[in-house]
Image (cartoon, rainbow, N blue to C red):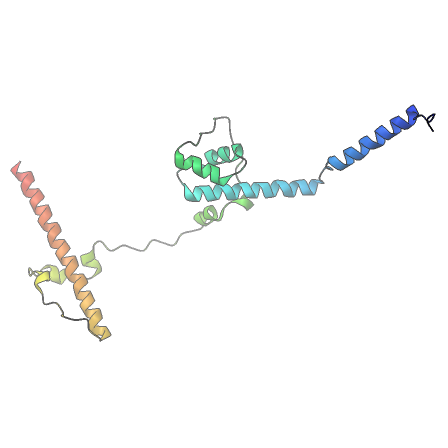
Length: 192
């Protein structure tokens, strides 16, 4: 048995088979094209979600800057948020031009902003007009000197009327204070 030797051919065969086994175990097979496309789409979708989240928190930071920082920190939203809060976010170089988000991956906020908006409701010019207090403005009496109810009424209609009267009195008192302030400012301007 001591005379047995391993031939050179069998040694080469063992090394080649061992190399193939190691290569098979440690190498990944190339992904089929459909899987690569799905991976690219999911990565793009995840990137856009991250950008959208950060821009919801910090609308003053532009998309390009957020994408630049996310690409440098591996897509970590927390790190980008911390950099923005501490003021250490870097502006991307001029040569960095990220691809615009695909139409199917646009965040809902931009899609909703493109939707037609309802016509704006006409605003009342002031509280006097809004609560129809024009006739009470002409009365020169002090609204705070009016009799105030002593206790909270158990009748719903009385409570509602009382609250309306208090609201109207507050609006009229605020108007009187504003008129007095304006008159004082005009008198100081004329004195100068």
